[in-house]
Each structure stands twice: as C-alpha cells, then as structure tokens.
Image 1 (cartoon, rainbow, N blue to C red):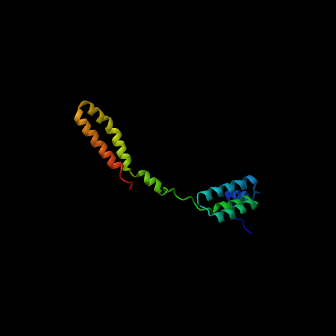
Image 2: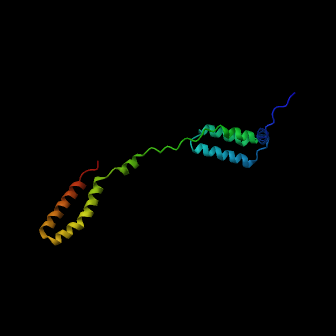
Image 3: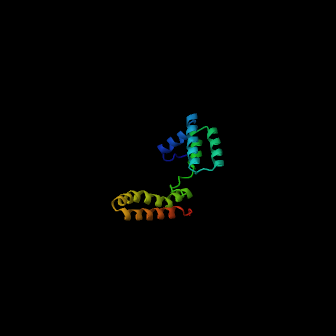
Length: 139
C-alpha cells in the first residue's frame, strides 16, 4: 500500500467537516437560508426542507452541504416602474395652469396699477385662460 501526496488543506477541510456543529453554527446556516429566501434565491418549500436539515445537522460538513448549493445572487436589475411612478412623471395640465397663474398674476397686477387699461385686459386674458384650462376634465 502506497501513500498519496499529503495535502494539508484537504486534511484541514476534512477535519473541519467532521467537527460537531454547535447551535450557533446551525443558526448561522438558517440565517444564510433566510437571506437567500428573502432575496428570492430559494423557494419556500426548498427553504423549509433545508432549514429542517440544518436543524438536524450534526457536523460542519452537513451544514456546509446545505448552504453550498444555494443559487448565486442574481444581478440587481432595476424594479419595473409602477403605474403610480409613471403618473408622477406625467405633467398635469391643471398644475401647469396654476403655476403659470401664480407666476403671472403678481406681474399682471403690477402692470394693472401702472397702465390702467392694459393691465385689466391682461388680467382678463390670464383669468380666461386659467378658467378654460382648469375646467377641462383630467385625461
């Protein structure tokens, strides 16, 4: 019988796999499973089976085998835009009309006091446009 090449890393790994698992080791494995479940890398049934195996595991090697085959983290893609987010991006005509009214009204009043007739005409025109736009139904 001949001895093979001695690999100290393989021996350490084998020895560690044979070590008895503590309750803290089991809890850490279950936390890893929970994280994978929350991230969508494990189905609920798979999570339940693996959690049961982790609680019943006696050695470090068994715990490692339970967590080793968890699928890798998926790339973080941007979540799809919701209808509410798209509605916020849409410019509301009534809001634009009110903003324009609030910007133009002080200027128009100032002009009205300086030039008696032109100011009243401008105020009438702005009021007419504001009422027309805000009276339109939302689309």
